Amino acid sequence: MKMSSAAGCLVMLFAALAAHSQSHTPTPSPELKKQDFFVGDWTLQGETKASAFGVGGQKFKSTEHLEWMPGGFFLLAHSYADERLVELTVIGYDAEEKAFTHTSYGAGGRIERWLGTADSDTWTWTRDGRPVDGKPTRVRLRIKKTSARSYSFTQDVQAGDAPGWTTVAAGTGVKSP
Image 1 (cartoon, rainbow, N blue to C red):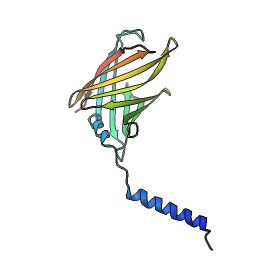
Image 2 (cartoon, rainbow, N blue to C red):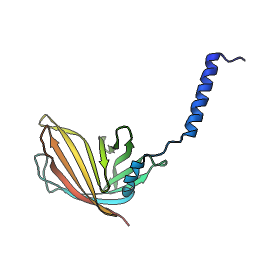
Image 3 (cartoon, rainbow, N blue to C red):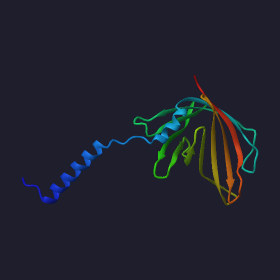
Image 4 (cartoon, rainbow, N blue to C red):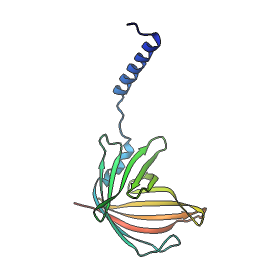
């Protein structure tokens, strides 16, 4: 059976692409190493702050387990409240945008997409929030490493074109031994 010249060209193209992909095994961005700090088991606790965005004084506590997905391109976070899985988060790095990606899937169907940056001891994540009084909002999560096994965090909201941020929650994370 004779192969047409077009089919022969396709076979050669696929063979060349396969050989190229095997010789150029992708490696995770070095930026992802900044996320190594979070690998392990954590207990988070904090409290909401009174503001125009909600009632303050509500305490919260949760646990998280973070691990690298095989290959090292994505960090997976399993978040639990009252020993029930309430959220799954996938953290990666977009080299083209020079930003960390953070997509969370909540047990109630909620999906949140954050973009973030990191320096030596601080991570800053932002996303679009739900409109308040018909105005768009932005949400910011700032995490500051306070020791090799702990961090503090604040969640802030910015309404519309307001110049400042309002803190709506604050707390700490402590790594289990």
